[in-house]
Every structure is written in structure tokens, then in C-alpha cells.
Length: 112
Image 1 (spheres, rainbow, N blue to C red):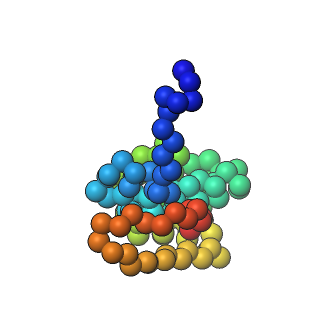
Image 2 (cartoon, rainbow, N blue to C red; image 1 turned 90 degrees about the horizontal axis):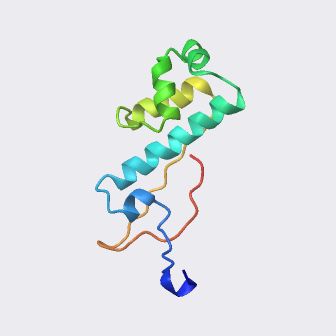
């Protein structure tokens, strides 16, 4: 194959939006929070069972997070999980208005 056969398309920073998922922003927020939780688990070398013992959440919840099975999680639940793991963590959310139909501006995703 030659380079001429490929078209490079720059993504929006939200893969769910790029594939026109109707819940793109919610899924992106969940994925970012889940990644942060997994990062804390990895940093502290916590198994799902150990994390469950520390937080009161089920070990199965942490296993689902590691497997990117986020369908059962609400944002509220993910916030509570990350707070139970680290009570010094700060989470911020930025809301930006844009004209209807306009794609979001390109910006790197920052950890939440």
C-alpha cells in the first residue's frame, strides 16, 4: 500500500463523538474517571479485593473498571469510588458553550 491510499483524519479528542455516539460526552467522562481510578489502583498496587476492602465497593466493581465495562456505572458512583480511594483528589469539570452543530475545539484531554 502507498501513502496515497490513506486519509489522515484528526479526531476531536473524544472517540465516542468521532463515531457519532449519542452519549459521547457522558461516555468520555466515565472513561476518564475510570482511567484515573485504575491509575490509583496500579500506583498503589491494589488488587480488586484489596480496593474493595479499603473502599466498601465490591471487588467486582473494580474488575469491571479494569475491563472497561462501564455500562453499570454512573458518574456519581465513579466520583464516589475515586473519592473513597483518595480523599485528597480534586476533580474539575469545564463547560464550554458552542454554536449548535459545531464540533468541539481540539484540545488534549486532561486527567480529571
